[in-house]
Image 1 (tube, helix red, strand yellow):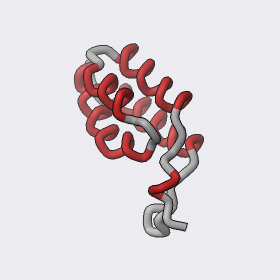
Image 2: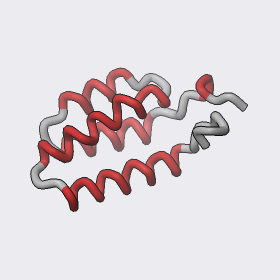
Image 3: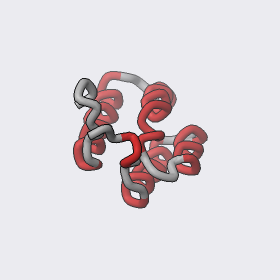
Length: 88
């Protein structure tokens, strides 16, 4: 998809996120380590959504996995992928 300049749909992107998130929780010890890795991922993923700024800020400020999960779930539920990024 990246080579073809295609943006995945939200279902695919959420499944990608969830898989990485689950794997990090299995491999890394402690919430802080998981949050650090996931926050770094969101520095790249967040701009693919419309009106992502307030969600990205909540993700970045989250100190616990429950806060992080809430911010991520809200972003996926309330925003769409930014169609202006698509080159079809």
